[in-house]
Amino acid sequence: VSEGNGTIYAQTNLYPRGETSYAVVLVDMDEGFRLMSRIMDVEADAVSIGARVKLSVRKGENGDACPFFVLAAK
Amino acid sequence: MSKFELNRAAVAIVGAAESDLGLVTPGLTPVDLMAQASVRALADAGIKLEEVDGIFASGVQTRMASIALAEYLKLKPRYHNASFSGGSVFETMVGDAVAAIQAGLCSVALIAYGSTQRSASMASDGPARLVGIRTYDPFTTPYGGRLPLSAYALAASRHMHEYGTTRRHLAEVAVAARQWALLNPVAWEKETLTIEQALAARIVSSPFSARDCCLVTDGGGAVVLVSAERAKSLRRPPVYVLGVGDGVSHFEIHSMPDLTVTAAVESGRSAYAMAKLSAAEVDVVELYDAFSINTILFLEDLGFCEKGEGGAFVSDGNIAPGGGLPVNTNGGGLSYGHPGLYGLQLLIEAVRQVRGDCGKRQVADCDVAIAHGNGGTLSSQSTVILGSAATV
Image (cartoon, each protein chain N blue to C red):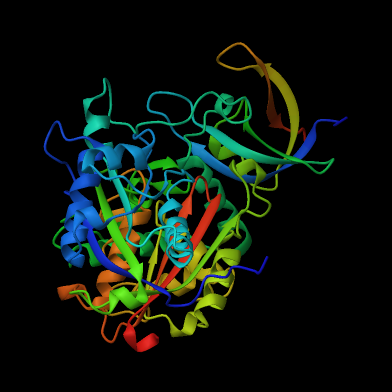
């Protein structure tokens, strides 16, 4: 079972016109596996490779619960 | 049972041709373009259509491509292959064709592709977009990346993080491709591109701007392969298949073990071993540049420079016309055209360079060419090394 803590391994920022930017990332979890996700609640430019992140389960566009992430508290 | 091995220079490419390119006549289908290129490639080879007994075809838009092409051309192949492994499938098919010819499964192998990607994307409602083959995937779709684009952007971000590669390095790749394209009459792009213009373009999925991304064009092509023995009596100089190799590292980008190292390491190693050649002996390099980072990754993984040094290697016009190593001499997917899958166009340019057919963009004393295909999201890698009669 994962504790939900990880580190950003790779990052790409998207800047859709008229919408808030966001960072799509690959997260290396502390338990040793990697997954794709998105950093929530901040604009893309606030995110960087190496940043610590925390799991935040939220609903995706189709209503399914998905493993999103937020930046970990410093 | 004895081990079956592919032999260096046992088979040659004896015909190569493009279909119409860019934005084709409305109403043409992918199979029309496949067939058009096939007829042109056979004319180039001086081989009659009815002699074709091996058909290898693939496509995003074409179901059962080898069978569709056989019907269209009224052929009854003894051997056929319609596999789909992304844009590298046509390099993989060169190896398959060599095996089939050596084993006697066919004697005249036709590899063909066609796409109306640009026409189809313009015809759809809303903004122009790729004809998609992706469906909802719980491991990627919810996060809003633009795939496959964002997958390559993630790889670029990691390369920049680990090795100090910059957006300027990526821009060097795009500018070199454009300079080659301006020497190719059939390339899509006709305007000059500067480093500053490339850097100023709008970011679509960082670190990529539109200038880091391949074109969306119509197009297609075909190549014809026969035994080396038969090749000697045909109208054009044979371009021998010296080496082939394949590698697969993952399917989706989240499962790529190291985003800075591709399976081109393995595909290249196999191809060089079969060809008994090293990177230093390659005269011209055709790499699947769906995105600018690809060129840097494949130059490293195929041994043209050390890992992490690709950015420096492409700087100061080193891969542009007049540079130290000619790379993507047709203008590449970035500036020549990218008809959905680009792998067959790599083979055509490599053949033409070895034959000396390339006019203003011809590489001097070109005897060895490498055509390196990429499929999926850096997932599948396939390397083909071609050589002139002087290499045999």
